[in-house]
Length: 123
Image 1: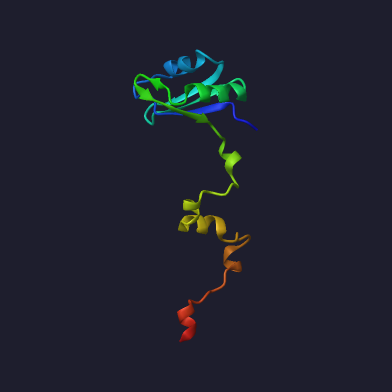
Image 2: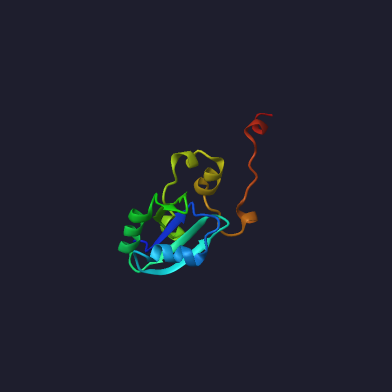
């Protein structure tokens, strides 16, 4: 399902939520707007996914008060779960610990057995 929300980064620090909403509602119908000024990011909701896609094309790499903004479609985290991460993330230990180990179900103490280190077996 296509997203009807966009993600905006690089906003000016002294930008208010009303100014943010008004900026994007000049060209499209805005349903909601959320600004996080301390992080210089925001989210804008549109009536249709087509409006969101058009807004990305229109506003991406434009300027607000001499700040160049980046605009892209916003995705819900549940839409990207299960996708294969980029190569640089697959090489990290955290990826292998979280994604590659088999899941343990039931009582952990009952299913865990003592595993000896390979060097311990030699002695």
